[in-house]
Length: 295
Image (cartoon, rainbow, N blue to C red; front, side, top):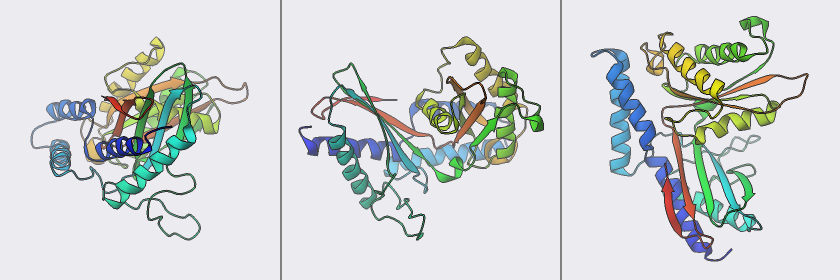
């Protein structure tokens, strides 16, 4: 991989933008939510505060949230591309972003409790690579805070506790139960990424992959698209609202995907993302030059 410095520079800029600048589709969704909440309500006050924070972060080039989260990179690269060199450039970009304050020292040694000074450690950042028949490199970055990560749930159907069988109505019950259990924790309004099927590991990964979709899109499978819309409608009736203080806006969107499964297993994996939906992407040339920004 040539032009290592250019790769590092553009990956650093991707991290910076992800940390400080909320994507347009998320900000638009927050403004639509503001318009439906009652004037003078706690829900409206919370949303106004969130939007003020969004504007201040962008203006001051400062992180949207003090918890800059775990960094999850997903790369689609040409066949035979040097992914080791690409990962090395990304690690250097993460270290630079940490030194300059766009990332908190957020990576902790699980045995000692000590932070890694650069946010580079075993398992951090997270890299997913896929080789494709393409000439450019597509990179997407999620920054997922710990508070919203704690709100994730996984269900194994059937689940008698919530009367959920092995069907789409059972899936619906799982998603709503996860939302009710959250009760605004994890910084609502949030976005739900859901995976039907897979195993315990692939289901959670596929649920997070749904966050790469835009909030105004719909699932390609019609029954899943209808279920996404239904969950959003039903979530409005729960009176959870922003930060759990009441109101209509508990979620900004629900994104559902499906994997194959084993006969003995039927998992429903629900991942929760907070309103600070830090997701950005870029398309880079084989030499690391910027071609266009995504989202």
